Length: 440
Image (cartoon, rainbow, N blue to C red; front, side, top):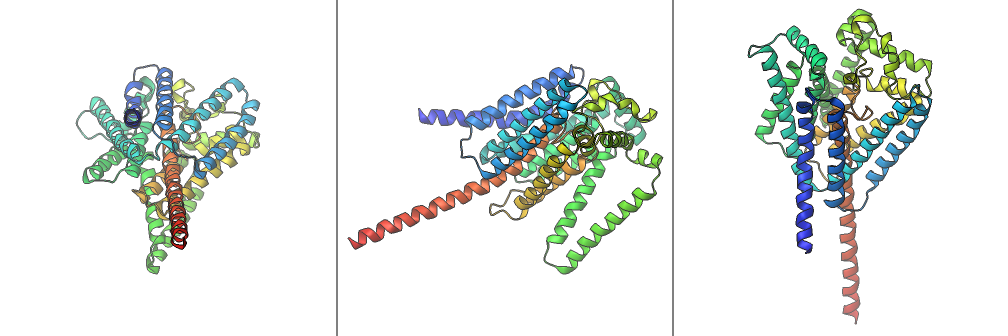
């Protein structure tokens, strides 16, 4: 009977770990031509149920300090978010979004617990790679369907992207990022083979060149440069350390100089219109800096965006907001919410670095964990979906899954330490009994 229960738990764990990534991959395929709210609700219900069963049935290890710390930080963030929700112009809408964020945090904690099961985590990683391939194939299919087999120009891709957003409510940016981040999470959990690197090349190339936006390619490139700098700084050779710091300083100077000399029109062109939204968000923040105006309050003032850079206030734009997670937090939650969110982001970066390079239990791919963290932080500067988005689409779930991957690695480290302490304690007790028996 016991064996049967173990087999059932193992089967459920395997099924859940494989089904969740595939559901995230299927989301955008089902989204086109269907009711977006129904698809989003179906994804939320499915993932909530699957991760609950996976975490409760498939794994029953003791709670770790990493899980407790994450729960405390998320709990404080959510409690403080009640203040701007009460002050919001539309408090019902704000509390609805708060409830979705609460559920997302619970899902993230469930993932952190479930991914401590290494066999299930491995299956989950391979399913993530499969989901990434699925989304990449979908982007290629869309391009062939609308542009044909010829290599499209950037202008043609921009036109296709705009048409898809208007007519089919599809965001190629979001699909491309989901494909990239699913691939990164997958390689955090499985050892890469040659086919996986070829898949990565296809995923990154497709997202960078065929989504009609410079954003995915630029974010990946900057993340890779940051990772290179970190690598150079960490090596023992003094010359390479100097090279790393020189690159970092040079890039910082170039970025600061560029921002100081670019005109408003140039900045709008460079950011694909996002800077107009950021200015509106900043004005909203300075109007009420302490508590903000409540979640999704961008809908109340979106008409303030200059003409050609305005966006629709329709349901399909819910994940867009001000196209900057940090500016959105300031405008909608004020400093009361922004500061604890910043603390969570800094803690995630510090934990990713520790897991990647300092843990006594080496991760499968430490550099990929740090790359994923940098990618998530940089992407938050140009899009809202992520750790503090509106809990609406796959990018939000993937952000919490990545957070869970990092926390699960911290928990595995604690599990190994706890087992080592128990082992030493057992050896000590055995030695005491041996000496007592020998004296007798």
